[in-house]
Image (cartoon, rainbow, N blue to C red; front, side, top):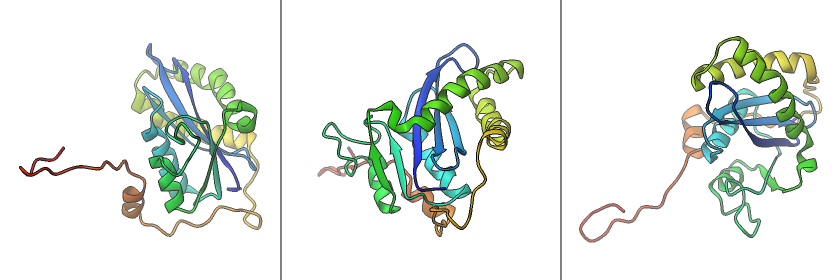
Length: 189
């Protein structure tokens, strides 16, 4: 547990009538779904939400594996230049990216499973709002899926490091940062 966390987002009409993206984090060793988050676009912020909630609920993993999108690596496949990569470096998490779907087989399989099951459940419950969908996903659907499909966490072999950060410290670490320039007229650009 915690040796490799796979992250990905999946585009679909999950609820309502508008396309949204399910950002998902899955532990490779236990097949445990750690957290999911809907956004209307595939955003770095969605992955920040995954990372934050994963650390709060489980701890800090050894490695995260994701795709080669700009959230994780630049056009030269360097991960240490992106905001997500810098955050992983700060938290001592190895970030690895790949464009090969089979290298992230657990999260890709989870996306397919969620498409088949979650869409039907959200429709059955009459959920059409993104906030309701996120609440149902993390409070009902993911725990039910983990109970049915994931392995128990073995504390003796777990690679997940304990979280020694406060929620406030994590909020500062896992946040979008922008460089601002103050010109001679004291205007911020």
